[in-house]
Image 1 (cartoon, one colour):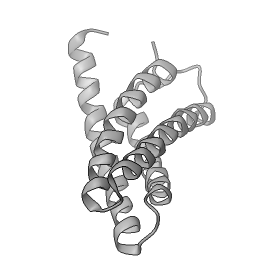
Image 2: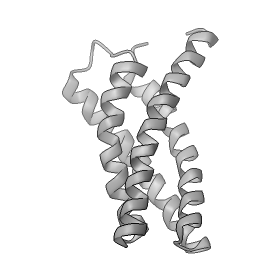
Image 3: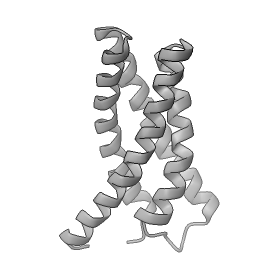
Length: 133
């Protein structure tokens, strides 16, 4: 893959990820700040819901499907990689809120940092495991 195609793919990944982030962050803030749930539990719920959107959009707009993977296997791999991302996300949220508190600003900053780390993981792992070579 040439650099131009890689940049274009990463930009598409960024748009899909941006929408998924809005879903994730919006639900996180709603559940943790409005409803009053624990930020870690809220982040698991919001992350999981955004995962459904992310799978559908990523496999349609970002990554080229592999012919040797059934949709079921593709989904299992996507979910497995995403669960690893969820663990990374949850650890970041836990560490950030333990260190800086669970108010709106610390949760926001922690979520932004977690998003950067998880985004890198998601792009690299999905490109390796899911995309046609």
